[in-house]
Amino acid sequence: MSMGPMGAMRGGGVPPQKSKDLRATLHRLLERLRPERTKLAMAIGLGVTSVAFMVSGPEILGNATNVLFDGLIGARLKPAPPRPRRLRCCAARATPRSLR
Image 1 (cartoon, rainbow, N blue to C red):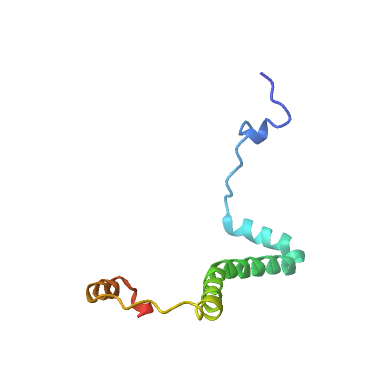
Image 2 (image 1 turned 45 degrees about the horizontal axis):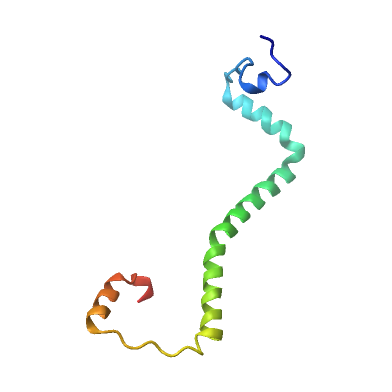
């Protein structure tokens, strides 16, 4: 059974050797990346910024949707009838403290 050109990619190759001195290996790697440090810093910075936007984006979009709904559609709706006492009690327990 012969190995094709992609044989090593399928796990049939020789396993890589472990580094005996991690500190020296990292130092060599950083020295080789020295000419590219500006691009590397920009890539890391853009990655962090992207994650920050992905995390905060839904909250900002939800707040904007609430503002638009309250201003455009909410003004045209009739006010909701008052809830019976029993429902007000249950709703108060179910509502998170941040919304009270």
